[in-house]
Length: 110
Length: 505
Image (cartoon, rainbow over all chains, first blue to last red; front, side, top):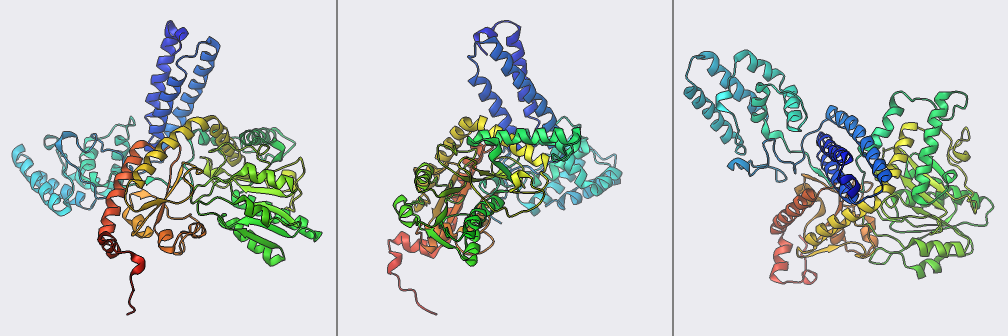
């Protein structure tokens, strides 16, 4: 968020857009797309945080909104056509080490 | 494993039906017994059954038994964070069949193909649903709107490689583009009988080598240039191989097995000076390294959509117009695509391809930085193991393609040991046969070394977690396989394997 957008209601807009993008990107059923969406929004916002020109800020916000619309459509589609979880994803109740229970995953040997 | 779940449920339901007023403690003891039984049978998971909520009724249990697959679907969707309401029965069942989660291998074979980027799919969807016109229909709005989209896609592809949109011909993929370029140019110039020589390299893709072999049957002469042990072409040898009747030189930009980047500018300059057409198979290069057809003096180029996060089934051929490249088309018909490739275009695929190219151009700096970082991490980890070596030039290779040989371990057995990671040894087009890859043999590797190599493909969607998982898995399992190997024992004792006299028996 630029110093222009750091104050005023545009800062709020940018922040709310960021949160919405992250929340929507988390809805992908595919691990790779989910992680990419989170990582890319974070890096894109970080990269543009010092943009001054209000017109450019407005352009970037527009692009962000278009991406948000795209995410809404694509996350729904990805939930229609789901697949099993990857070996590298944790369990539903968090990673294997939580709660003292070691869930052994038999992968790769038999 | 999932067959244990219905037996658990049947047992629990029988207990519940038989004595519905039994105390919670007894019920919990019964479920413990069931859990212990299942634990001993499967030996590898601990259920998180919430005993107080394990309120199993008979008819529910029987229904669930029959509809287990649907419940499994529900359970999985709940786990993926979507906002779907899950019934407590499904929750119990999900805990009982928790063994089935997390089985799908992680994907590290980006040179074979790449997943379709969600943004690309989003651009394609209208053309699969409501915008269905034929782009070649000139008389109505259905045709005009799809034509507009196709021309826009053409512009995106042209911008990515620094070409003019009129120079892009859509084909069904890089294989068709390679065939079209090589056979087309050779046949056009072979007709007059003057230019009958083709130069290519030994590490090309199978479709190029097969086209050249086919042309040899038609009477052309082909020189297959050897490569240095690093995988790069020797410019002096290329210059020496050029004859007055050479029509075309075909060298691929980025090799799909070892990832080496050939010196395209130098080769292009040499070919331009000798007035020979320069064709390059850039299927693995476009969108990943910067490619400019004018700076590199490229006359013909093959592009594949499914290597840059686009749909499968579409590709393009860049055919230079100034100076004009004359081709004999392989597919005749209504004269679409400048007469070089007739046939109705598929607007959804073309639009997806265009969008993939647009995204690739925009994201190239970000993606290449990230892939370099992941690749360095993976390569350093793999090379820090003993008796491993990288195939290909360590300075001139595309970071997303890491090909490492593990000595004293057989490649196929390592792939089977790594069955939770989707990998490849050699390329997809040679993996059906049991022969070692011809590319690795061309590098001068011995047969054993060529057999024991694995190719890791890193892409836009690969995460650090996956790379760490791969490193850990490879280190463990290579160690395990080496322990099994008698050759490894000999090597550990310090015996040089070349001095051993293998006896006949």
